[in-house]
Amino acid sequence: MQQQTASLVFATNNAHKLSEIRAIFGDKLNILSLADINCHDDIPETADTLEGNALIKARWVKERYGYDCFADDTGLEVTALGGAPGVHTARYAYPDRHDPEANTAKLLAALSNADDRTAQFRTAIALIQNGEEHVFEGVVRGEIATEKRGTEGFGYDPVFMPEGMGKTFAELGVEVKNRISHRARAVAKLVDFLNR
Image 1 (cartoon, rainbow, N blue to C red):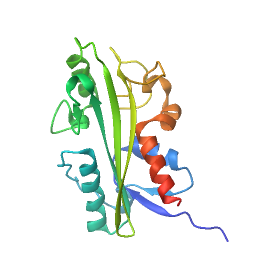
Image 2: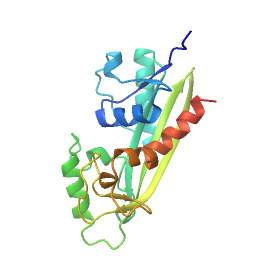
Image 3: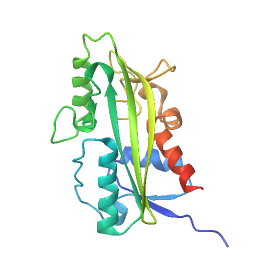
């Protein structure tokens, strides 16, 4: 008899993140989205840390819908900007909405005279399973390009160059990004934990 694949909710409405995570997990785990569990809430992200926001989202789903769940929050931390945009990465240009084009334009403008373009992407994943909370972190260091390059990926991918690659995430493509990204590294720790 074939063993049924276990399911876990990923607290996101972001189709790009969802497809990335599903690609990373493959057939090891059935990843459900918020839409799959009929959750259409605008979950607040009011913490001042990535870990805090990830926990808010995971707890929201567990408390209101009853599902074991994991949630992530990702920040781009730019050295010359004192770690900004950080927890405000998705709403860097406008506090009330996501506008990836405007975010990238604002970042490039902010760094127009910067000598130090080093940065890191950091993902925090909060897991609530069997009544316990766990947090996993993934970091990829690199630098911000002087202009957008490449057509794959989303968000800041056209301007973020991971260390040692010489290309932006958008030039490297989704397959390579899914192997080396901050999210991939955090998810790898999550997978290791779930497979224990």
